[in-house]
Image (cartoon, helix red, strand yellow):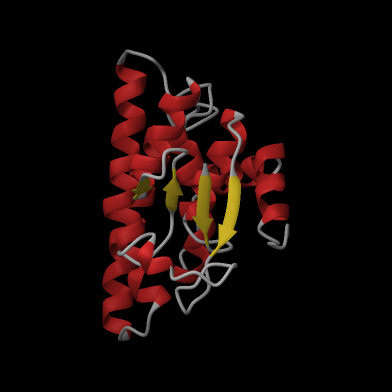
Length: 196
């Protein structure tokens, strides 16, 4: 499999999941000009023009974090409970983060008016409060075992710094613990991201 990524972008969640799942992968970086490291046109691989994109061994290309993360879990048999409510809570959390958090980061990654940024901050604060409540006293978002929801949550929390919001104590502690995981350290190293 080939993961097309941009360093530190949301594709980091998929990168961490691939490592945690123990699946073999190749990384190919994307430039701002929509070119791959080997100078191919990324739009010919993913017409949407953004990462992540996961090219499967048969040449099919999957996009969108919730789909790619679910594929990694299904392919590896890891990172997603096989049955029960924990499975559905993991998938529910992925959808929530994609729609209510990731989408509300747009004003902070582009040149939006301050009024739009403030509106997004209010939505993000509410969403983070809900995630904080969901985590409760558990080790991970959905329980005691790491799931694909945690891989995405890590990136969501990492990207929160751009919004100027402070994380709750529980979410900050969780983020700090996740940074110590070998999979996260490896992904940071492979993407040449600063570890601090």
